[in-house]
Image (tube, rainbow, N blue to C red; front, side, top):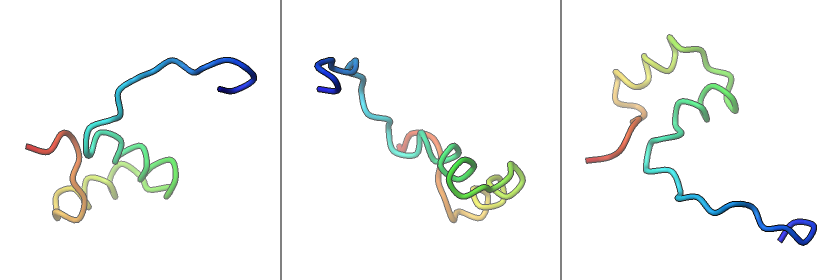
Amino acid sequence: SIGGMYPPAAPAPALGDDTNSVLAEHLGLGADEIVALTESGTVATGTAQ
């Protein structure tokens, strides 16, 4: 608990669901860079099939 309160439960993101936000927010990559990494197969986004 945090200060006696419990955060709301939520399902974990599926594999690849948060890849774009991690690349942008934590690594500072722009949209064009993320597209290039995705198209080259370096990273995968969305739900794995």
